[in-house]
Amino acid sequence: MATLIHPTAVVEPGAELGVDCEIMPYAIVTKHSVLGDGIVVHPFSVIGGDPQYLQFDRDLKTGVKIGSGSVIREHVTVNRSIHEGQSTIVGEKCFLMATSHVGHDCVVGDHVVLANAALLAGHVSVGVHTFMGGGSAVHQFCRIGESVIVAGHASITRDVPPYVMVAERDDVIALNNVGLRRRGFSREVLKELKSAYQGVFITTGNIRTLASELLLASKELSAEARHFLGFFAEGTRGFVRMRNKRESGENSDS
Image 1 (cartoon, rainbow, N blue to C red):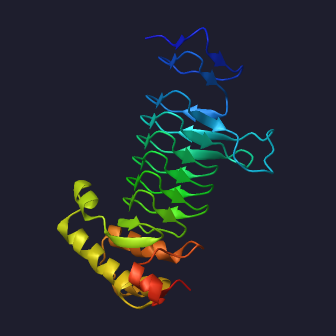
Image 2 (image 1 turned 90 degrees about the vertical axis):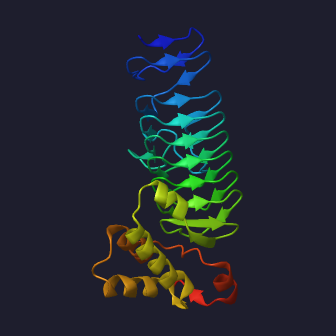
Image 3 (image 1 turned 135 degrees about the horizontal axis):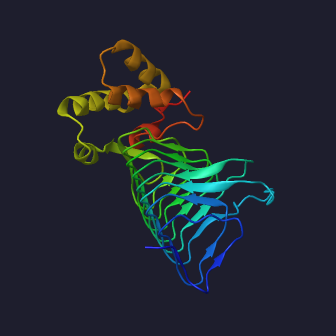
């Protein structure tokens, strides 16, 4: 079908529309955002609005990029970048449920789900196939790895490695075995990830050092296990920990 623009909609001069677009009543389209094919944006969402940053210069040329096939439900906000020429990124086939928020300069991977009222502060990264539970909130600059499940109402202030489940305040619970099986991870890979997980989170010691030692000691590890262990070599915010380890102080980040 041809592009349809309702008479009550407003399209900013300079904004470019692709073929077969449908702009619904009272929608406002600006040139801050780049949306891929097949994206659906529900009423009252604001994509590419100014970041919630007191020193922001509105004259900066920044934006938002959202990959094809993503669904944006009601009252979602995705803020544009605070850096000249940069964009806040949401990947392909993501599902941002009602009232969820993606702060400025976030990078959200493909196939990510943000349940209702999930909140990402500025500069957060979220890996592919991750699920953020309803009402969960992530502190600025945190990294969330791929295939992570964040429980509803969880408060995340530390980095979350790939393939795990986290809940409450920075508490790692277990590997996301069900999600990994659904993605087609083999038994051999799951066994390696279990061993790596136990070596980092069950063993007492410095988390970065434990992960580094496991990575160096096992040259035949799968790419997935190496990805899990390599995550701990980066970042500045420290890492989620098992609750008993966190409370006792048995595991440290540095």
